[in-house]
Length: 546
View 1 (cartoon, helix red, strand yellow):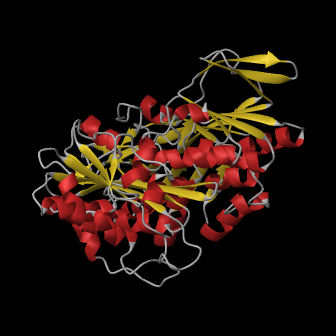
View 2: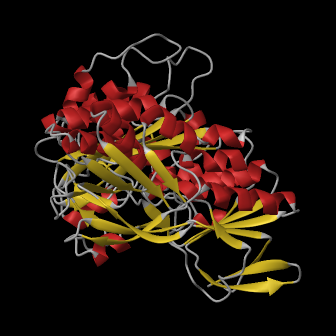
View 3: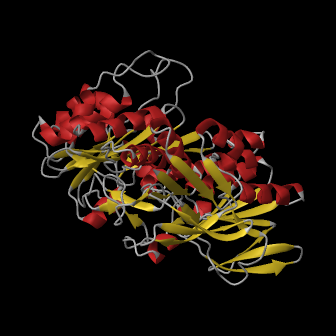
């Protein structure tokens, strides 16, 4: 069997290595249009920032070593420019010109590329991207040549990582984002702590703004915003999203999705039975909402590579879709998510419940713990876990991974309370934050608590703040009345049973206790999920970051 693989980074190299382990006799040829294969592109921003000092650390396996280990014919600087499905050949443009190469099976692992906006002046050499090792080298060359000011266009994963690491290099950095929040793959209120963290690090934010032009400004370049503001820059990094590199697949007549991704079945086979595809270039099953989705992340690409190779040798392996589990470092915080955002559930018309909780990363009495901000989305009727977002200083990835695993196992949100998770004071509480979220979800579905949310406080409701007076002095929701929880039973007569009451505290626990007291004393009561802290995130003033 002769297998050609187009693309030599995550998915392509993964297919080649796994295929060789399964079949020592297969002839494997891997084409990569760039100079490097099998490198850690997720680590590029951290070499820019000096966190990863050695550039060679990013190169997982050079071509010669890959060939020696796996017996793969690796051809770098060789771009496949056409596929002839009838003849089962590809046209390759290599260092010595064009030639044809035949195949028995073909793998498309061409990945994706950054979307480059094209306002006037975008062709200036100071406008770049951070996607490949040469991109990284170019940025570092500009920094070493004296660049002092940088503008990062886009506040997604790559944009935030790039901004943080340029800031670590000592550059003055401004992020411009079209949406009114950073990290658009999160819901806005969950992204607010990240915006605050970036601002505290000295990174300027222009949210809800668009770059409309790049113009010379002396020795520098000015990024002109739709507000008229001109941001001087020695370096501009575009990071506004990615698009699949599916041009050769489309030209060959393979079926593609609405955004150009190659369509594959559960075995990662395209509409041509002799052609497979994996990685950022494909659209896969959406196990949450049904239909198809595209998840351009390294984790899914590597898993798809293994499954694809299994199918090439006749092992019936299936890829059952991507839930998009991801994590990001922003200053001293981590931000992780899986599944759907609330925004996406609304767009899809899915009935859901949500909850917010703000537990400690470790036992509250153990020094060094930090607060975790957790949002859980689950089915209104069946409790199916639909998504989660977590932000905090410690233990974020652990909790998100537990929830992601529970989703894949088909557990409902209340079953999170039943998980037996490791415990010692330096790492968690006896009731882990994941357990606690499951307990709240169970209480919601059982009717033991009625949650009200900061973006939908009922008009006419009495807002009852049950915190201590010293806490209230530091801030409270306008219009609230304060009766500390310890005094509530004795002061119930001060409340009007004819009016609904929304109890609130700092993070939601005391509000829940107050709700239970009120409801069992004849009041129509609910609890403000996540308390005053979540309310502040919903009501953050974006002008602070503009």
